[in-house]
Length: 254
Image (cartoon, rainbow, N blue to C red):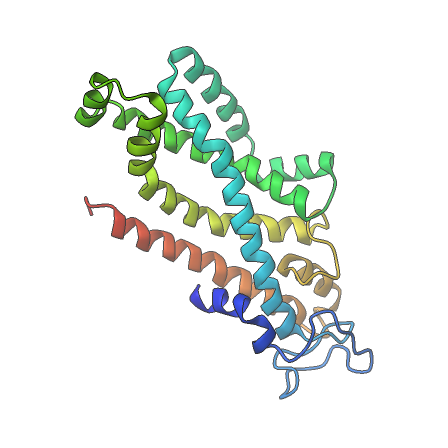
């Protein structure tokens, strides 16, 4: 995970080629000293495109998770604090969204909104909202009955201050763990949508798009699809390991 982040941050210094530069005299070349992972069907350096693709993947994770949190966290807290009627309505909406498989809902939303990076990120964020809404609701229900919350209410502390100083502060750990675990799902969903032509469009060096471009050349140059596929696997695995590590670190019961 650290290597992917560092690669994304220092891509201009690690790569000797522009990810968009074409060399039609050097297409589908094998790995060499000049092109460590070979070139694609337009002669573009695969290593450079994977490194720059890590930037796009990290942007996808940050934006999608931020949007999901911005929508799901307030809804969950509202459901826990605003009474049974509001709770039932919000959770019913979340259950309806959660009833659809995430990737199916994302495909449906992108079909309506149109292909592209922004619409794809919005679609991925929407199917992740119920996860954060449910988690924040359950955490808030447990926190609001704690003694320090009863003391805060007895002292006349307002809801806004209770939410900021007590609820958000005590839900930060579990929310952070969930956000990290969601990162792997975001990368996988984004790559799937881009592979289907519904996400990031060529010639942007997105891993799913690169795999889609290489599927017609599997018998000639396997690396066009293999290397970005391996980057996706390692990224998803890295986010899951990081999430498990954070959970073990932040959960005092373990």
